[in-house]
Length: 136
Image 1 (tube, rainbow, N blue to C red):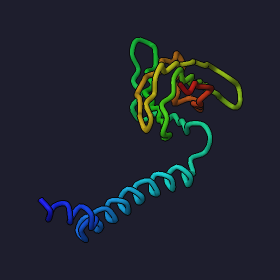
Image 2: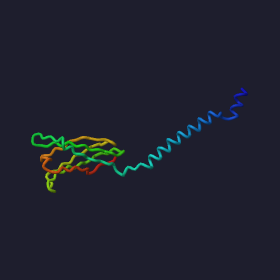
Image 3: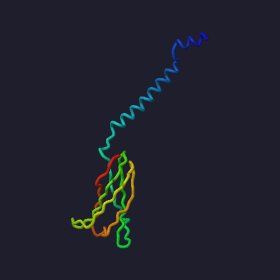
Image 4: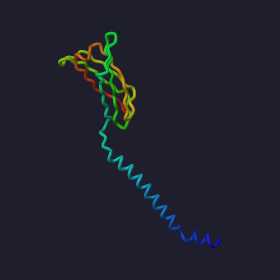
């Protein structure tokens, strides 16, 4: 019993000190990496939302033109109520417009949809734009 009390009074062994030092270094490295990641994030304010019209996949059915599109959120935060505006223009004149609402778009996500037009998009220029969205 006196040997154990002598060891306890002497302090920790070299192996325990090395283990403690390595543990502190590992934890400090994780905390430092998280801090650097947060500080150096160069993502601009607001989520980068884009819409792409897939013109090569347009279908005509019963006098209407079904135009598929994809809306993408390249940001690290999800968005809600994404409002898209589709305008069909010929020589600057607005022929037709349609609005599409995407209820939820996850971070780094893509949603597909279809806008239905009565005018042939091949006869004019179809412009798609993001009007607004909410960040939850």
